[in-house]
Length: 371
Image (spheres, rainbow, N blue to C red):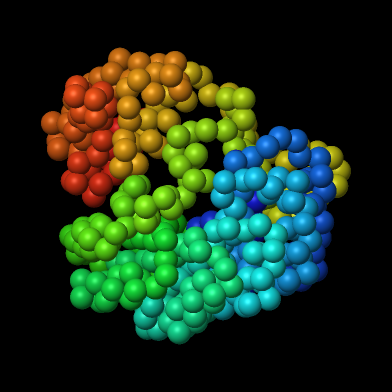
């Protein structure tokens, strides 16, 4: 699978800790030139392509066309070709371009359908633009539409959150990702929290919101296939499923990570440095490590357990060469005793483990225990 990072945004959201910078037409043009050159040199076939950010849709149509044309050798025959967009920078011309160049999945950064909540999150679009973005994408011929929603902002209630979910399920969506608001260090939101300018929502209320999403979306034909992700039948995100299976991938762009041949490498997290290194033919990676078999197996377990399907012992052994029960025995028993995990019996016997309902609420704890 192939991931391409577009690090530009019109405005940095207060909660975001992903690498991004303010959009500049000249800077973006130079960067797209570099990406196109990299793609000419890139070898291999990919089952999925994902253009993320940042905000890929902030690029003007000419730059988007240049990038997508460079992807043509790889996009033919891919199972899934996704691009992330924001409502305020999406129009029919860009949507038409996406369809013509083989994009078959779009992920829209909606975050909320309420204007006051969008303002709290420092988003640039309105609730009307959020709904219109979904409807325009559908009208332009993109059937596989996903949105992101955030819950747990200051003073938000369960009723508020349910109303958002009610709006979402009435739209022509195939996939919904829901995320509890987190206060990450080195973000504007974190600074405001520490200064006492806002009060974080109580953890118990946030947990009940997550529980509400699990119950409500499943009742409305969205399969809960990963901790934060829900899809209609046949529309799980194939790209992310590959991540959760810890399969090889290539990442292009600043801060992007690649995992090939058992080696994980991360690119420099500075756009200027990335462009300079490429022009000088210097390594783009600032960190690389060869994963020992046991470490790779533990990471695979920590990621895979986040999925509804959980971990199948036989498949885990075939993928990693390591026996799951031997690797995770003590941790596994404690997690089962605590009510976070349960044995699965898909073939009439205990052939795997997966999260319980309680485990979904404390998934980060479970993953950390398996590492």
